[in-house]
Amino acid sequence: MRIKFKPWAREELKTSPFYIDNPQEWKNKWKKAFENSQELHIELGCGKGNFISKLSKKNQNINYIAIDLIDAMLGMAKRNVEVVYGIRQSTAKEEVENEIEKQKIVKNLKLTRYDISRIENVFGKDDDVKRIYINFCNPWPRGKHHKKRLTHEKQLEQYKKFLKGEIFFKTDDDNLFEDSIKYFERSGYNIQKITKDLASEKDFWNGQPNIETEHERMFKAEGIKIKALICNQMKSLT
Image 1 (cartoon, one colour):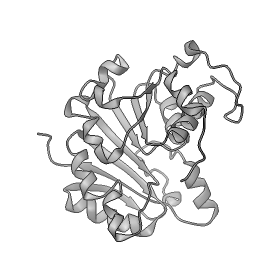
Image 2 (cartoon, rainbow, N blue to C red):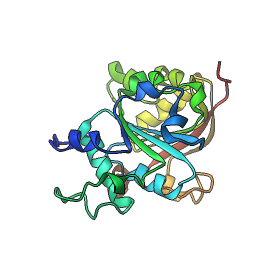
Image 3 (cartoon, rainbow, N blue to C red):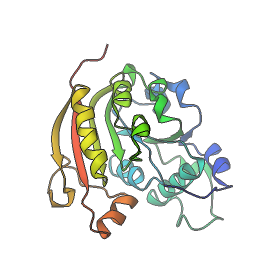
Image 4 (cartoon, rainbow, N blue to C red):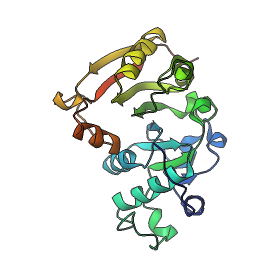
């Protein structure tokens, strides 16, 4: 998704207690960043943060890190988190209270900016990452760009270096989904659940409700079925 430049985003992120600008400095030390030992879940490509804001608010006993590369996206994600946590009234308002003390109520979520193609520089086996969320990532339809997909084997090999649990993946794109199944299988991941019509599944996420993203609502309105799978990393970390 393209998003217009937000001149306020960088400054708001720099002053936010739940934003981290140099995540690679926290590799294998994320428990210190959160000041607790709760299990860690990460979202790769968080966009405007609608998903991660609701998920983190609902599960205060889990730490979350949401990653994107674009300041404008992360700026919108920050504001969406503030709305969900009751810090601000609306993301549409430019002039709102930006009190640091109020933002400190967001204790179990960190936003950060980084190139996901180099994600192994940010997380290590000591970070105890139990889940990765990949929601509606860029399908990179042209064959020469397939290696940029967040589910490509090149990426999956990086995740193996720190993931101790499962991957939750959903997309609207048929070709990306079918290719991703092959990527997961060839990379030694165990596909536990799979669906080509998420809306028809009552309990696909193992007891957790399906939190719809902005893309998901849009695609469903167009009659496009959402594909999803859950897989885990079978091989032990070295």
